[in-house]
Length: 386
Image (cartoon, rainbow, N blue to C red):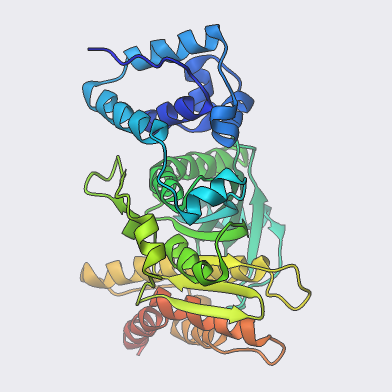
């Protein structure tokens, strides 16, 4: 029996996009509508009623769904159309106090033979906390992403993707987060390869392996007591979804329960300073900066993650070399002494840093497990060089 949507609004149209797991641009092309229309559906939900022609296009897209996707769509329809239980979060949504945040995704990319050329052609940018020289490339507008490739001289690039989001809940954000990862990894691979080709550089398609997220919280409807839980959930979203099927994360419906329990991730580390508050965990960082001249700027968190993720990717490569029974070799300028110096700069606070900056540095570095990885790698490299 087919699915019949009696009244297509932005809410139902966005639910269909979730099921199809399509980016805004792809979904717009699939339906033959503008990308602006797709964005408006997500942002305004049931306030936008689709016209007859658009409704017919959406009906046709539903008719082409696989049985599995059809069942998923039916469940989503039931969820979005059911009246929500009265709760503080429901009241906040009803009064228009919704989540507004900026997603920062960091995707390390091994650059291979194109590394030197990409570094040489990049634009200079400030040195990060680990003191490593880098160059940057602005990438062509890929839909609603704003992206910059940071190229490090030791052959690793880190793609920084920035997107503005207005999720209805932390759970909805978690679903988007996990679904966006493979899409953005694939896009990162293509974007870096296209950039190298435009510059006349010969290289194979890079293989980015993981994505780390930082959320810059702009607006929320949580009470002061709920804010800490909200930041922990943003930093550790796996608690909210079932990821047994990696391609189709499913909400567990436990968000309100977590708020009522004042849930904290025991492995995460908080870093606060005045009204600004942050939480760092293994899978990401959540930060709520206040408009105060003394507040830690989000750029400081971004700079920290760029260096941490570049070094994490480098250490991953060198660890695999050791595990494959080979000696880890790097150019002399990036040998074990360089790694030891980088480790020191990354983990040591500067006299000019604020207390919140030092707390953020310690939280991010500690939860990344990077210091021990660097020590293991430089010990192996030192043994080879001896």
